[in-house]
Amino acid sequence: MSPEMVGLDDTVVVVGASIAGVTAVEELLGLGHRGRIVLIDSDNAEPYARPPLSKGVLTGADKPDSAQLPPLDRSRVEIVLGDRVMALDRDGQAVRLASGRAVAYGGLVIASGARARTLSNLGKNAARVDEYVVRSLRDAVRLRDAIKGASSIAIVGGGALGMEIASACVGLGLSTTVVTNEAPMLRQCGTWISDLVTRQAIASGVDIRINPDGASLVRCDDGQPAVQLADTMLHADVIVSAVGDVPNVEWLENTGIHCSPGVVVDSRCRVTDNIVAAGDVAAMGDPFCRNPHWSNAIDQARVAAAALILGDAADELIHRPYFWTDQFALSLKMGGPAPFVGQPEIVDGSVDDLAAILQWNESGRAKGALALNKRIPISRLHRVAGNPTPTPR
Image 1 (cartoon, one colour):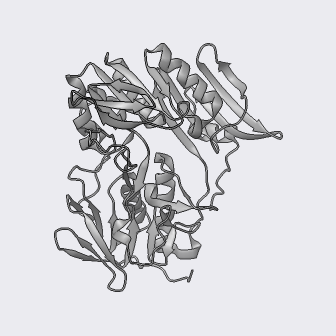
Image 2 (tube, rainbow, N blue to C red; image 1 turned 90 degrees about the vertical axis):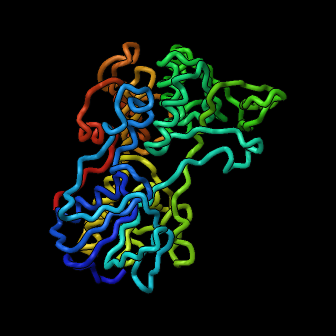
């Protein structure tokens, strides 16, 4: 990587107005960028946070606009909504939009995120059953409206998102079934947390069906949709797919940018000297992998924006894994590289009371931590988890 950088007066285009894109804009402004900044997103809604979508917005406890992020300074940032970026012209240094418009850039932030993967994507919905997802604000509102008149729901996928949706729906009184190919949240969090979540979900009234071969969507003889697991048919008024996401990289085809399993970046989130990537679309590490979590998107966006302006003088990304979820009266805040292996030690509180701080250790070193229904500063959780401490510049 050469030491060339984007000038403070150059135009920076940010593709994607979720938390990574918005954070990158804020970081550029904080670094003294004076030039034009254009933030582009295909979504028509003002920039919003995604975590509330599977919680208060879905249940109707919170209005959709409550998820909006703090507004950006429109006198400094041009925001283009409802216009999808279709292609990148690297030679001409411009992005081309669905409207036909071309926007030139001196620096480019790729924060185009990801979209929901569906069972149709996986070839498991030949019957073309209507499957709901929760990825965008529109998705959450659509599902919210659907469950208002429903008595039952089946959620395919037992990760954090699927379990949050299940928690919301069973709390609304729906007969709720989760269909998963392994124990809930096992791959994400490990056995101990998976067992905890499973117990709470069952106690709340959720029916959990585990089938290692997965599930498919079918129509019964009467035309009604159902989830099929081996020889079993599960009927539900509403069916939700929560089976992961797919990075939005199609607009980068034929550009020479390595886009598998996401946009591959270096330790400063750079693709080239004047192109960076952050958030759910970005892949880094050895082997390359995406880390589609809220806190990671923020950390990457800050590093990426600084790298555009400062080049090699910018700090490298310090990986400090942090993830949280709220479901079934459990507030779970996790630090460290999950999934966690083995049994944790209790640092504070009581597991029986469902209020504790726990630590996982390996060879005498902290390798992870969980705050279970405990308020804790994130900095302390990082310390308990053994996450690295940033060095002040």
